[in-house]
Image (cartoon, rainbow, N blue to C red; front, side, top):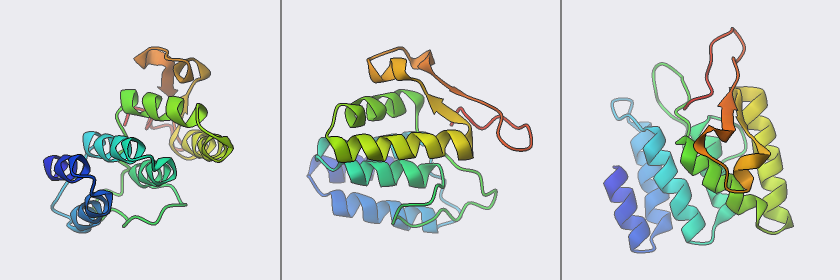
Length: 146
C-alpha cells in the first residue's frame, strides 16, 4: 500500500491516497507502519495541505482530532511516524503561518501527553534525528519510538 500511496501522491491525487489509508486500516490483516504514515504526511505537505498532514500524524498516533478511519489493529497500539519525518513535519509547521503553528503546538502537546513523544525545539531548526525523545507512557512502558 505504501507504494500505491506514493503513486497517488506523485499524480497529485491526495484524495485517493487518503482513501487508500482508510481501506488499509479497515483491514485487520493489513499492517500499516511508520513509513506508511511518513509518506502520507509528507505527501500532504508537498501538496500544500499542512492541516491534512496534522490529521495524518494524529491518526498515526491514534490521537483525537482527525477524520481518517481508525485502525483495526488487534493490539490497539499506535504506529506513529518515522522520527526523521516527524522532525521535518515539525519544522515545516513551525515555519508556516499562525494556523499551522497553532496546529503544531496542539499536536506536539498531545503527542507528549498521550504518547510520550517529544519533539524538541532543536529539531525545528534542523537538528539531528536524536533531538526528539520518548518518555515512558502510563504504565511505565516506553512508547516514544514509533
